Length: 336
Image (tube, rainbow, N blue to C red; front, side, top):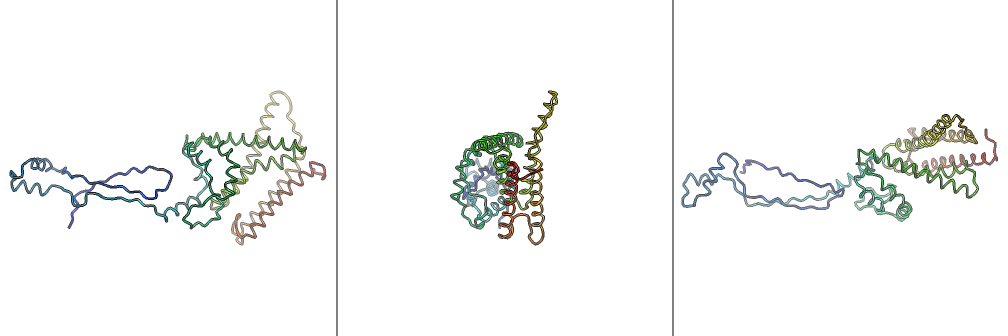
């Protein structure tokens, strides 16, 4: 029969290294116990005596003192649980995208920028214990985008001042990137003799919307619902219109008002282009409403045939918008 007369709590400080530990061993070595009770002084006094000077009472005191047993060392082993690891990985992959964008240091950002990561297409076997390896396409995309990854790695980490510094600097970098893409597209259109209106709807719009397209793809894979994916596209277009045109035109209007002049902008084919865009947007919204019905069960995904048909229809809307807008600019068809 063993009687526990006390316990000792040992605190272990675990360092977060942002990685899984495969197997860790450490040992707890028990030292000689000491009595801290009221008889601690009496025990210490008896221990100083020679064995031949001990009385019966002294021997009883020594028998009651704490002492070690045969086991004086305990081995503690922390071993990786593959089941728990797979569960955590699946939860992170299916969580909201905002959980995956956080960084704590510039070093982490540059390591992530230089590392070739496998694509997030979700095509692999989720139950496979082996880590997914990057494909040939992942390597190609990595080296094509390496310059931009390194540029944006200079953005301050999200841990700095609750993410506000990262937010402001990111907006500035996105503005610079958008201006760069717009100027390159305009120069390209000028070089091949294409009118500015056609360049805007073909190259500039496509170039500035590609980041939103990839962001919506990531949101569609990682989010349970389609809200984040669809909302990202509509929100980015709203920002392009209200900030890209509204703020610029407002500043120009205020400037000309102060100067005592009028700010006039030639509408060109704006009315025809906006009407086409609104018609295409209405058709896309109707498609989303139809796909939300119980027969389909969601705006995104679904059976392969339905996915291909929806993609082709939306792509046809975009091509129809570009073709009709371009024909109207070159006076092949009459707009209004």
